[in-house]
Length: 410
Ligand SMILES: Nc1ncnc2c1ncn2[C@@H]1O[C@H](COP(=O)(O)OP(=O)(O)O)[C@@H](O)[C@H]1O
Ligand SMILES: [Mg+2]
Image 1 (cartoon, protein in one colour):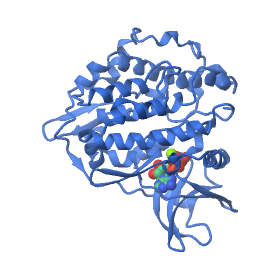
Image 2: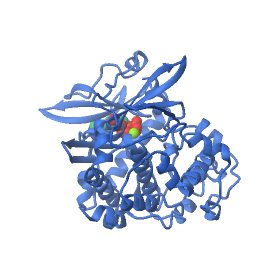
Image 3: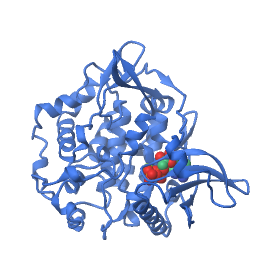
Image 4: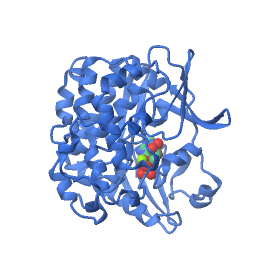
C-alpha cells in the first residue's frame, strides 16, 4: 500500500526541482550516444548481482487487491452515480479512483473525482481534457478504436465529478509485477514478484508481439487524430489474456493528452517513462513560463513522445525490474536473491538525471542486457532501439513499428 502511494505521487509531480536547465531543450546534439554520463549515475542503475530472467523466474499469480485507506474512504464516501451499482475498486491514480459498476446488467468503469479531494480543480480539468481528447479520437475511422477505452459520458454532481467508460482488463502494471514492502536486516526493501503475464511475455515472443501490435494500433489511431497520449506507462494499458493469447488491450487515461498542433495543456506526467526531450523540456524555463510547447513539438514527430514511452515499457518487461523503483528492490528467484534499483530511478526524480541514465543505458545497452541476462530476439532488440531513438525526429512511428520485422513476422 505504501508503494502504491509512492506511485500515486508520481503523477503531476511538482516541477519546482526542474528549474534552470543547463541544456538547450531544443538542441539534441548533446544527446550524442558517445557522451558518457558521470560514473555516479551509472552506478545507480547497475545491479549488485546478476539477474537471470529466463527461464526459471518465480511467478506468482496473486494480484494485489486495491483498497481505499480510511482517509480516502472519507473523501470518496459511499457514493455512486444514480442508477449504477458499485461493484469494486478497479484502481487509484494520481487524480481519481475508478470503480467497476453495473447498470441494467452491463458493466462499466466509473471514474470519480471528489470535489473535496486535494487538487480537485485540476483533476476535474484533467477529466474534462480526457473527454475532449477522447471525442477527437472517436471521430477517426480506424481499427485501433478497440484499443482505446471508450468514454461514454461525464457527469457533474454536487459532491463529485464522474465519467462513465468502457470496462477493460487489469492494468499491465498490476499483471507483470507484484511489489511489497518488507524488511531485510532491518532495512526497508521492496520485494518484486514476477507475475504470470510477465513470464509469458518474456518467454513467448508471440505474446509480446500481440501486446505490442495492439498498443501500436491504438497509438497509430491517436497519431492520426493528432493527439499525443503523454502518459504511456504500464498502469495506463489494460490487458486481458487467455492461456497464451492476448484477447484485449486498451489504452486508458487521456488526462495528460494534448493536441500535437496546439500543445497548450502539456504537462509533466510519469518521468521514468518520458522521452529525453520531454524531460529536458519539463526541466526548462520555457516550461516554467508555460511557453514554447509549440517549439517542443516542432522538434519531434506526432508519435515521438509516446513511442519512447512504449520502448521504456518494453525495456521494463525484458529487464524484469520496475524502471521507476528508487528504493532498494529485491527479486527472489529459486537460485539467488537479487537487489537493485530501477534503471531510470533517481533521487528526487530529476529529469536531467534521468536523461543521463537513459544515455548511459543506451550507449551500453548490450552490456546492460548481458548483465541482466535478458534473452530477447535480435529483431526485438532492434525495434526497442528504434523506439528509444534519442533523436525524436528519427524515432520509429507506430506504422513503421507494425511493419518492423519483429512484429510483421508471426
Ligand atoms: N476503463 C477501465 N477499465 C478497467 N480499469 C480501469 C479503467 N480505467 C481506469 N482503470 C483502473 O484505474 C486506474 C486509474 O485510472 P486512470 O484513468 O489511469 O486514472 P489516473 O488519471 O488517476 O491515473 C488504472 O491504472 C486502472 O487500473
Ligand atoms: Mg493513470
